[in-house]
Image (cartoon, rainbow, N blue to C red; front, side, top):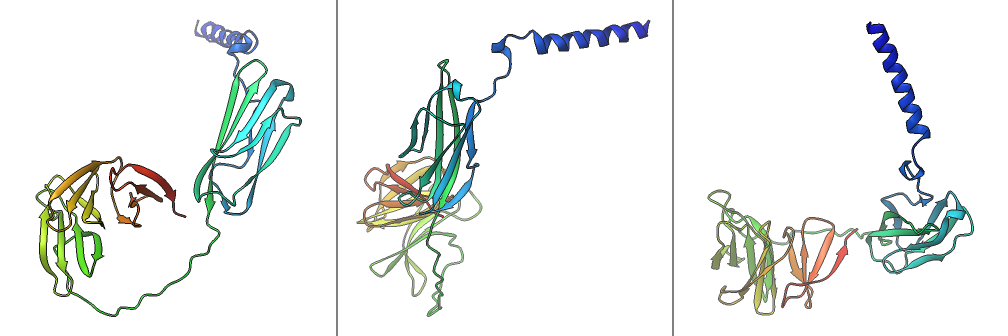
Length: 271
């Protein structure tokens, strides 16, 4: 009996297989993409100033009504393809460093849209210069201060420290006599905050927090809290260029922010 069951099972599987391969409607069969990038591959790197070859493979020209190849700020191809491999070149002389997306949008004659994207990275064409530091003096520093931010202003040292909860130290804003290590003024953050980078802009001190998404703003002379800004992500280092606050979050990105609103002005990637 078990041999008959096995025989019927095999016949059933064979018939089911044939039905799936022959009787499916065209719309139910897996479609292949008739147009896609051949090069570049994802995470391809190119030095700024060099041209990046881009090729698009088209399996059937008769299917394609319109093709567009573009980046966020440049259209590389916009029209009807005439060959099965369209080639263009991305010029990078005016490109910002860091990641960049190349996109492909193809309109098929049946009205469908097919897309493909590639992420590339543009590296600097400037080789870094080696600088050497020489220790010319040593000053005392409190070992209880877990330094996160450090900035001189008119010969005076200001320091932001990290730590939260009942262990791991406390987060503070400090004004320090760097020659003696004496603390001249301090402000203790709530234990729920881990203090990070600081910078002085005008008569105010800005202090980031690590994972609490808060930037505290203090009067430089009194250390009185005058404002609080919110942001997304982590806060690490903070400085300014006289116009914008410049913030880091531990990644390759630097965030330029408006000192009046802490709104994001622009982002650059460091490579």
